[in-house]
Image 1 (cartoon, rainbow, N blue to C red):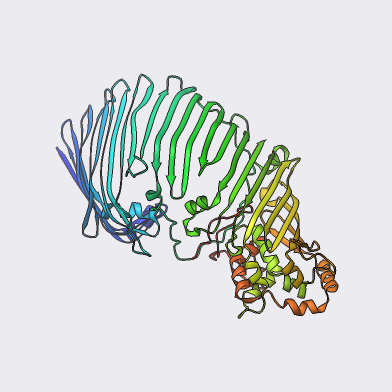
Image 2: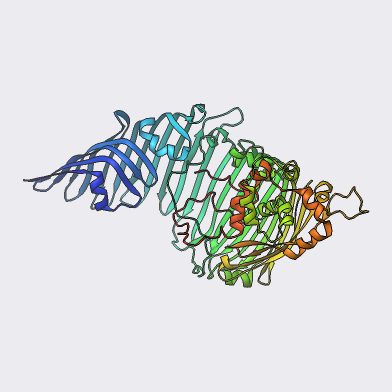
Length: 637
């Protein structure tokens, strides 16, 4: 008989730098491990306990505060068998017990038969809080009860079974800002699967959520997969539900609060410079199906959701893929060949008269009621390769967008290009007064205005955007903006131009001349209406002076000084006195909203001599996408 004992005690702040575990940091906590090894004639026994006490820190993005866990275990082995006789662990938040976990298992060295059993018992808010609150954003978990079992067995023949059950009840969170608690929610999952003679089956797969008056909230999974040919796996997986009501669950999840502190400034990301290698997929007629009769999600009512994806040899086929969003038909299809370098693809998308109000209120509730109206979007694209070189050579397609009755306030615009148009119109009085000024400099001037000194911005703010239309085509190495129009009752902007695709996508060039027209009131203020012109025209065209230029990575706006000077000469100096400045709090509001947009379009503010740069600066807002119309809301530090 031989026996050895080992004891390790260490502060986590001392231990973690030595272990160099990625994304892990500790501000407090201690680790204690005690083990005892016993060697007898034909058997070995290892038992012991470990304790992590008072841990405060971060592991993989999950924050822990005064969190503790302890466990004891016993492992036996002999010539034939390895047995995990006991593993029992407990979790604590402070002095509060958060749950218990136990494991047992066996493995036969001769036959390779094995079994494992895992049980979670009496987990509550104290044990679950660090793991769930990271997804709940600005909510605190105040109540929860979770129990779960899992058993896995493997026979000597290779056949295996997996059975699992999880039940979460009385899940309650409280909004830290309002103090309002969510109603108690629950979730139950049951799973029974196995493999026999190279045929895998999911006999039962079911998730049940808290039922509502509109739905039983039961989602079912079934599967049958033939593994007899490792290079031609076939079968089907089906996920189905009659009706799901997800509203209360969506309300649990909110945007994660931005952690304090600086972070590196985001730089434009270049596209891939190498094509992905051809892939040989080990599937033959492998079908994945999704069928859900109806989904309620806040203000969205999605009916007839159906999608079928088929993997066959090296191809992925998606057809059909369709749903009706609040009665509006939406459909898509795809054909992707992974068997060639860079892949070949053919995509098709259609959404007709989709109500934007319910959609935006659902996916961005913090921007509730900022957008209304309808949108129709159709797109068809096909090509080969995903690098700039092959996109330039092979991409062919067309996109059409038409949105009406948006009622989108100018201050709520998030698209960089549309935001640039808005700020150009806001800055017209000062551009006319000072044709040599740049929009970037005017932004700084507008933001410093005090009391209102003119009605120009008031007229603009009282006229939200109503219509946005665009047609984009791709082919012959260019993306052509054949027609685009942005319209409110105050102004109308029309544009045509092109995007020249380059091998490095962020270097793709933009050249989009923009034509502006103003309503009677605004046109009169800048002397745009010649004597004898009709007074009932909807808009009066300005001479063309604005062009969107630069690259995707560094877009710019360019104004034609000569055109603006000629406009002043034609209008007369009296007009300059009449228009005053754009100013006032309204202009300040618009410009502050769009300041980040203008900087983005101009490639950022110019650095002064000795400027150390923005490597560690915190951006005012997240990186904006060029054609993102409504976008994510600006993040506040």
